[in-house]
Length: 387
Image (cartoon, rainbow, N blue to C red):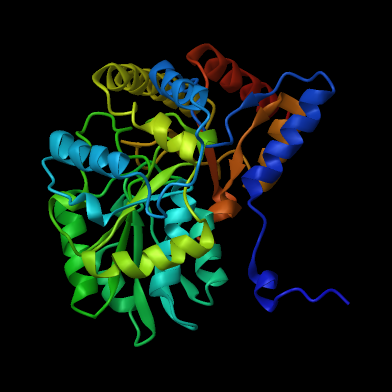
């Protein structure tokens, strides 16, 4: 007998990681694979961040930090909120975590009782619903579409709310759609949730990767939300596995207890490296990269439209295109398999992101250079022409 917990029957694989596995298998045979599947910037970690880590490691004193993270890093993040967004966030409310995933785990662990419902946009980031289930909650999808820029509305939240509902999770910029919520929209959602005794969690993991609109934070308008962020996306530190969360003051001690048991502490070298993330020279590098992502988006969108992909709404953030492929294929899963096997182009089918028309959608990450993106579009066109 295998004594596997019953909850595991509800935990699906992270399909994009399965695709990445297949891409590596093909690459090992000598195939040239263009990676448009994984949400990982292709740029190396900024040199000032690497140098900060090198200097710290050279001292050899790599020990635990407090469970909530280095005080200096929490203060640096607080200054960043003030200087960049005009938001006054007390360092004591900032929790450093092993990636944004660690932050989401802590938030759901401290908030969720068995059977509690969480409302989540569908399509949305797949791990959210599985983390809810892991803490014995129930993920309840809110079908969203281009009419609301793939974001939930207060009316939709109110209609879906039940006595078992614990809260709402939203993302701005969102994965997989790259769409944004305005601050006014976030405030209205927060008021809708608060009026029903619930909690709002705002995923700002892609904050800073905005195009044509200024980046913002829910924290500039409210102290009563949970805000999750990461050093992975804008700061280009995916493999360092470091994130943070800002929580209402009343939750800090309870989260600290969980963090002590879950993680002991976040990675000490990663935290010392991240101290350099907010230096002016580093921010200049990151802004150059943001402009590069904008150019990539602007190159890939028309190239894909020309071969039959449809985009009901254009992304203003993150680095994803959520394409409607219903004019060219019946199944995004089948198309994704064809593209990786026949074209050597790895993409992510909509099944990863929920139950709302997944067969019609493909997520495409523009996380490689413009020349490779255009080459990918040409390869895709060749497969489609072949029938």
